[in-house]
Picture (spheres, rainbow, N blue to C red):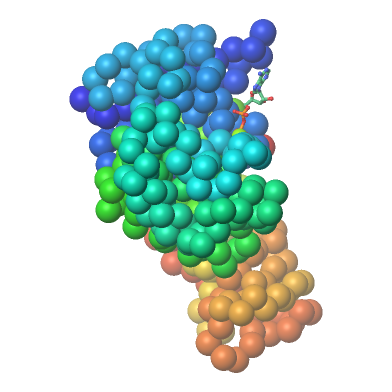
Length: 356
Ligand SMILES: Nc1ncnc2c1ncn2[C@@H]1O[C@H](COP(=O)(O)OP(=O)(O)OP(=O)(O)O)[C@@H](O)[C@H]1O
Ligand SMILES: [Mg+2]
């Protein structure tokens, strides 16, 4: 049996349904992210696992035991909340050691655990400070240290790095993931930052309006989105509107604005009105072998790559080109675009209204 299971979990507030019949399993030692836009139900899901919100329906088990109605403090779960409330009247060390003191751990051992946890989040030397003497990012790391110090079997993190600057956040992603692996802590992370989810997770659950739209490895979530919502939410993509004329064993023949595309359907039933997707980095500027002509309307340099918007007869194309030295054509210039049909993805459009 999986370490953590959610079966048929729903949460209603009056006649509003925040979570709808959600099933999820997390394996022991796994790092799983709940990724989705604001309001999709990430925090609610996490709070039900932690025990601070009671599900309207369904069952939650942890290591084989039914915890659906167990008190939060009995669950043995470490939580870093979205609003990471620290005790203002306690020092950093006091905050980090609070749970251990409650467990009646001896002072010397406690001090060791506190030092270790602060070391992990790179806050050594700040033990004696009070929360008001810390920056937002430092406070957030104290909250992470407080959860890690307990060495919980299950760690729930709700946007734990939202207040860190970009560089520190990137470093924390890698370090926290390394700590999690080393200690083998099963971890559920809530985030709306797709890079964060991709960098850290074994699997990503893409959430949309209280349900899971897709559950897969980061690679599959990006390369093989299962729903129109997942296609557009995870990374940037170009969406073309088309019509399936024929479905062959391996690909669908899709007519898009008078052009025929051969799109791999990956075993999916696709028919009628469809969306065809292609990632900006899979579209190339071409000279001789262009599939489509267009005009550069925007050209932006972001260091490692150039981002272009190209106006074509099929609509706007976003193109990401690695910075190989020579800049691409300037705004206003005519360019040719090319791609490999194997890089196209197709999904039936009936669900496409769920793009919000
Ligand atoms: N106590 C409550 N009473 C009524 N509605 C609630 C309550 N708590 C949450 N909701 C609603 O449930 C939905 C999901 O909220 P939740 O906090 O889980 O979203 P989230 O995915 O964590 O969003 P964010 O990324 O903004 O933190 C939202 O529409 C929210 O307004
Ligand atoms: Mg939230």
